Length: 376
Image (cartoon, rainbow, N blue to C red; front, side, top):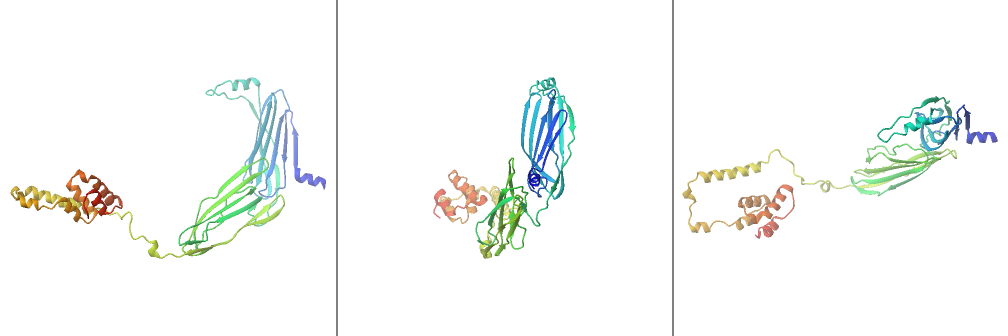
């Protein structure tokens, strides 16, 4: 029994010797569950102190597992190299999973190292060395399957917040969900599209913090949901499994009923086009230009004697103040002041242009009284 317990918790400790180096590999478990963390420790030690040696160790990538290097230490005393590696490994499938390694042993001399580091930043010299591939047998993990329907593996907690449960038609409610704890996570969605409401979302935000013993994961969702009638968000159940206790558990997002108040169409439809609908040609301006062109030609061709009037008639000519007071629209007043060509009306013209062309809102009476000194 004691032997079995040791086999479960220490599983594998291999120690191999060569003439010039020593390798030791230790796995925390040879029979993990799918997506359970497995710690891999690798120690490399130089035995032949007559040589200058370098080591390069890597765990080869595979679709059968995910891994992350979480620690590396090196002690490089003269001709006495020691390296320690630690990896976190998460099997992605059940059954036999082979961990494959790559180890390169490099041999060089003190003189070649000195030559390589003698160059400056702009003249880096390559190190001459002999690279020797060291054969390492793959380690086989016998990965246990998870209980049927398991969504997450590890120890996690779930929190959720719905900002309100009553809105007007097409006004969104916001749902925030956070899943956090110890274990490896991938991104996934909680809700599917529905005919009862419009679901707006973005890819969930995943944050993972790796340590020498495991990974802390945090997954956040932000949803906005809108509809034109009352709806219900269905309950979501996440089935978790804790490999340490070998027990399953459930994390629940409760069902949410949202009351949607209908809004009359007259209240949500805008009767005014802002900005106004564009047209291909603004004929009003062409008519305005044409009318002044006709007046100019008529005045040019008409005999000058017709323009001679008596003093009485001159006194009867309508004043600019009267013309201003009679205008009824901003555009009409703008035309009048432009033709008047009087610098006293410069501010009034600028305001009127803002109203006519930029849709600013300034009452016509205010422009007349403040900038034209005429009461409407």
